Length: 409
Image 1: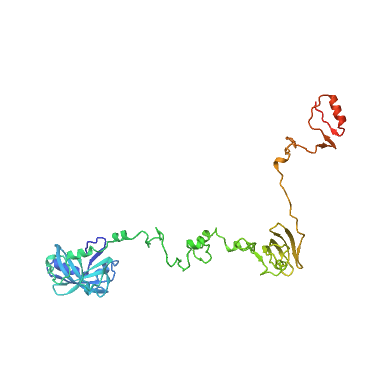
Image 2: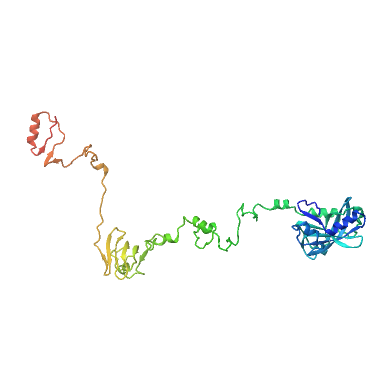
């Protein structure tokens, strides 16, 4: 079988009956005429030569094709052009093998040759009258004894057939048209670009495979496949086991404000409210006017309940906006307020008005003005004064018996 599609592989095998006719043609003892071709969907490409030579007919014949032309190639070879009338195709099918029939001079019709295709040719049922022609180059022994008459009913010529084949895409052309992102079934899938899986990705068992969103949410719990991957990706996420003992009781509200708010509308008694607090640390606000509030203003506080329930124990404090401060403890008999703590009145020292001492030596290296005098060991210390003579010293000493004089030199 010949065509301009050189990538399509086909092999033609002559049957035992054809060899007998060819031998008689060489000996000028008979003539031959090609009568028809049968188109089959049976794939015989992998059959041995011996198996093909003994065939007398084909299975799964879809339609019979007319012989269009027979032309001489050389002394012992002819080209048989077969016309496949697509209007007579019973349905769309794939042509895998072609059987060429011939009749000898005695009128006996035999299967002359079998052409097997490696790649099938698609035959489309066409009511519009299309036809497909194929060339079968055939050895005849002696071409002068072969009937070369032309069938005027032939649907196509060689030129039309070759033009038709030109529309078929060659194998290399198909490969060039396939995007690199298509999975190659002969090797592991290698996606060159991102792939959107609208229904999600699952493994062979139907288990969901982790996605970036699953991992970012830490949702590896329901992912039974790709477990090593999800465990690795979610390793920096907070897991349920890690938080089992975290903040079982909140200290504040979610907005950072006080956890409890005791108001005249919601609280009958501050003491009873604190007694019923659960175990742990609690921040709270109590409106002015609530029974048990020790201040005429709203107070805020913290309570640590160490034992909750029928016999509560705990400690805490309250303070109002003026700075008044109360500490308390809680037991089963109620809440006990300590005496209100006095506010400390503290005025920071003015650095310019204090005397500084060297922290390493204790030495004072600056002067100080003692407006009420300076004493040591019960004696007034005389300030710096220059005495002109010993008599002057004696006079000063006599006049100031309670003054300590420090004599220099």
